[in-house]
Image (cartoon, rainbow, N blue to C red; front, side):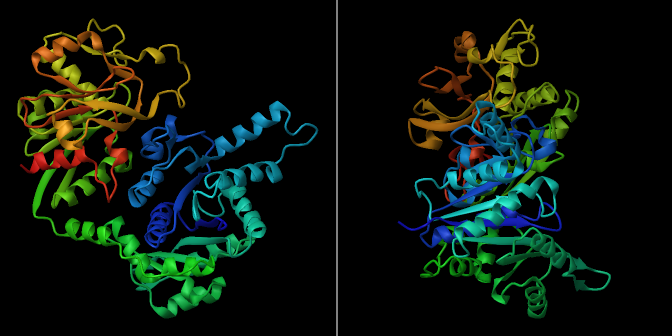
Length: 533
C-alpha cells in the first residue's frame, strides 16, 4: 500500500490571498489525474468551531454532512472536488487545546508538565494524520489559516516542521502562497514582501518547496528567477497566480503553470497523462457565454459582507451556468424593507431568495418580502429562517392568525406556527447543539421539489433549532400552503410549497451546502429556470 503524501499550504504577507482556492485547485488537478485527495483546514482561533461566531466576524458557517460547523473554505473544497468533507477536515486551536486538556484531566499525562511541545504539536500531528487514517487518500492537502508570523499559527507551523523531518522530503512538502504587489506609481511588481515572508518561514525551520505568487499582473521570467534565487526555490517551482474573473478559472491557470506536475515530482509520484477537465471546461464555457440574464434579490441581514452567504452565491453561479444564464444577485438588507417601500425595493426582480439567519433583527423585512413574492407571483426560495418567514406571513395574511410568529422571536405569541424543536427545549449551551448535518426527507410526487430532485428520498444538511409546528398543518394545507417534504423518522416538515404559485418553495434545510460545479443543486437549478421563464 502506497504511503500517504502530505502537502501543506501556508500564507504570507496578508490574509485572504486565496489559500483555500489554491488548495482546492491543486486538489482538483490531482483528482483529475486519478489520485484520491482530501483537503483539511487548520484554523488558529480558539473557538472550538465557528458555530457561535457572528457572520460579520467569520463569514458563512459551513456545515458538513456529518454535522460539523466549519470554516467556509470547506465549502470551496467540496464545490471543487465534489466529495463530502467531514468533522476531521476542520481543526481549530480550540479543539486541539480542548482535547489536550481533557486528556490531562483524565490523567493521560500523569506526572508530566503539559506543554506546547510536545503535547500540543503531537495532537496537531495526530489530527493531520487522522483525516487519512486507513490510507483512504493518496494525498492530504492541509491549509493553515492565517499568515506566517502570526502568534496563533506558531504551533501549527512547528508541527509542519516536525512532520517534514519525520516523514521525509518525498512524503511532505510545503507550498507557500504570498503576495507580489504592483505599485502603479513606479509601474513595478515588488518581490520584497515575498522575500520577507519566506525569510519568516525559514526562521521557523521550514524551507518552502513551492512558491505561489498572487499578483494583479503577469510576472516576467526575470522576476520569477529573482524570487527563486532569493528564496532557495527551483525556478520551475515558482508559480504565478494572477487575478481572474472567477475562482473556477484558477485550476486551469494552475494547470497551465504546471503546479500539479511540480507537486507530483516533488512527492515522487507518477506523472501520467494530462488531466482533461472536460466537464470543468464546459462549465466555464457556459458561465462565460450566457444566453439569458436575470436579476435575483437576496434578502438577508448580513448583506454588507457577501461571504456571509458564500455558498448561496456560489450555488447561483453553478445553477446559472447550467441554465446558460447570467445572474445578477442583488443583496438587499432586510432591515431596510418596510411596508411603505417594499414594492420599490423589490420591483424589477425576476426572483427572490430569503436567506437563513438567527434572531429578531431584520425579520419583519423578510416576512414582508415573502408576502410580496407570494402576492406578485414572483419565484421565491426561502432557506431555513427564510422558509419560516414564509410560513409566518402565510399564517398572518391567509390563515388570518393575527400575531402568528416563531417562538424564537416572540415566545408569548398566541399562534406559534414555528416552535422550538422538542429535543432542543432542555439545551442551554449554544455551541454545536442545533439539529446539524444530513437528514432524510421524503418528497410528495408531482411537487416542484420532486420535479427538481427527480427522486422520492433525499438527504440534506440542516442547521436550526426551530421547526414548523405540526399543530397548524391541516390549516396550512386547506388554505394552499402544502408540506411536500417530510422527515420520515421525526415527521418534521422540511419543505413547503404553494402549488398555485409560479414557483414558491421554502426549505428548512440548506441546499446551498450541497451545490458543486459538477452537480449544481437541483432546487437552485429549477429556481433559476423559473426566474428565466
